[in-house]
Length: 373
Image (tube, rainbow, N blue to C red; front, side):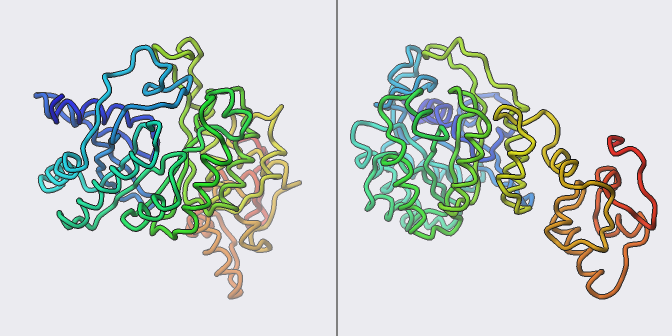
């Protein structure tokens, strides 16, 4: 298999690792551009900065038996096994970087019977990119389940970010999907090792939503624990979509709204300091509702309209339409004796009036209907 075909096959094999990426649109007017269509992804930071990543597997050969995965031993229609040699990958990335196709690297791999052997190849490739080609930009490396502490440590020394996917929210759900992965020893122990390394951009993880029979509550309990105990920077959610040839090819795909609501809750945890109990209060039989969770929590939290001048930062964040920036601006004004007296004052602080007015009192005025969004 030539290098262009490897780019296509191994890039396509990496698409199930979610890192906040989307595929940039390019004209597929030749074989090389077609290959890049499968391997170059555009990621956006929370500040809005976009970065194009070469997102690829080191190898698509895997000894794990996931019921839903394209690269699993259980997939009857998987691509022909192939892999990059470390020198091939380093040269390919350098070519793409020098010619301005990409600005960073996201490197994962299928997992052979010896995780450390594959991890060594990944480390060799990235080390060559750093040392021989003097690349100082973004590199995200996946830690392979079962890999040693030494390979985690060495990966951290050459990476901007590390991650290992938990795939499911607990041991029981992992066992539903695979007989070859142990939740605590293969995954959580490696996450603890990553935490010790102090990687510049920290660590992330991913869960497949709806591959098993897990509830949203199971997922958000794990999310809450991960942020507190593993110093996680981001938690990614990937809605289950059936892959032909796998044992789960006939299972129904998960509605994208479920993934979207999990991201809503995730944002409330990370940016607004919400607590697990607040979210549990709006759930029905362990599942998130279809409506915006922040609005539903606000309906339960506020008995009537509130005066923003009387609220502290944390309380302001519980009002829909008020985020960290607008909450800080309101608190800064009220602490200096200034009052928010009009809708114009609220808007000047960055408040989204349409979302906030059903909950707040401004200048003695209240929106009559709390459901009138």
